[in-house]
Length: 218
Image 1 (cartoon, rainbow, N blue to C red):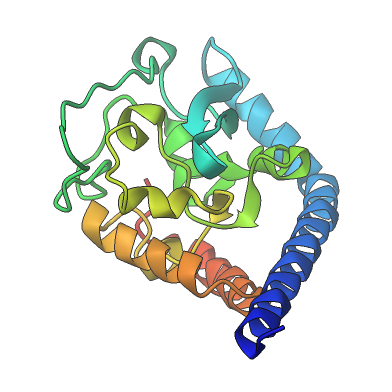
Image 2: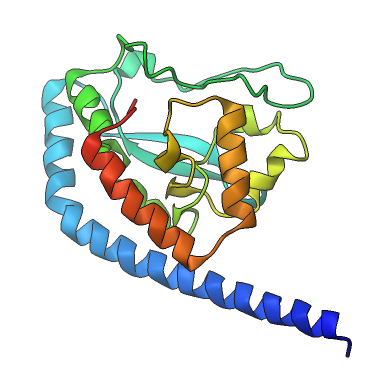
């Protein structure tokens, strides 16, 4: 066997082991997260119900690893009549680098008072602990996009779908929602190409800082 083949097999083994450790960590952390966050989630759900009629959770189809669709869970932050979640885009070859899905500089009049608070503090993301436990998301990875956007991806842009989407990621700790699609893509490519358990730990620690500062939340 050639040295190159040995090196390739070694890298595959390390990659497989990293994937197993990452999944095990996701299961353990999501269970711990659900237990610790349950009082906060129950209080958040109560506040949403008291503010007005409508479901507590917002469920939306997102694109997961290798393009597989799944349902993402979030606490509802918008008025029911404004949360259809339907989007249409007519890009032919790729999602433009200049595209920005949400502009944090503009206030959304359809967001409720409770919704504004849970968005600013990222409490609306807590139900995604269940997504992680079920295995269609990870704690760390590119944020999952809606199919209307990913269906327009170029071959290069589909590279960010090679790993599981995450609750937080390299792009989120380097700007969150206040960046263009091109900027986000470059950061997500960096994560896919340089994935390691150490990088995941760095992202997780930086996420805590970003959330505490409530930076660029929408």
